[in-house]
Length: 132
Image 1 (spheres, rainbow, N blue to C red):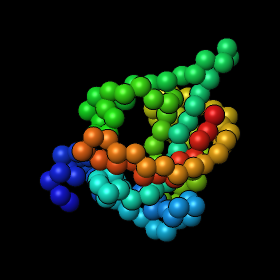
Image 2 (cartoon, one colour):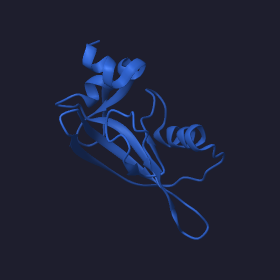
Image 3 (tube, helix red, strand yellow):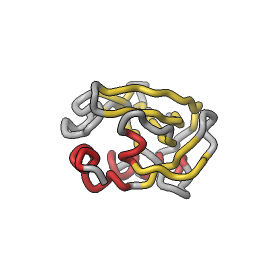
């Protein structure tokens, strides 16, 4: 593992993510560091948008120490499924781990691919499944 990968992603740098093609079809695995360091590798991710009974969106501020977009306001919850884990299950797991929510009824709305660079630090190159 490179010194840069270790500095940016810590112990998670070697975490395996699901490598996918341009249509979201699984191709194998890629490390978190290789997925997010330039030029980036397309990998599976999810984004959860939670609403209260009045239709208000729950947002959170990313921890300022995050390598990519630290301190930015974003969706309710987002992450990557583990290899072999269904993306729906991963979204529910992270909603529980990050927000303490049990039994959240999530519906997948759509999935799409995107690529975004964060300054000269790293890249998001994801096939993201969107849940509400």
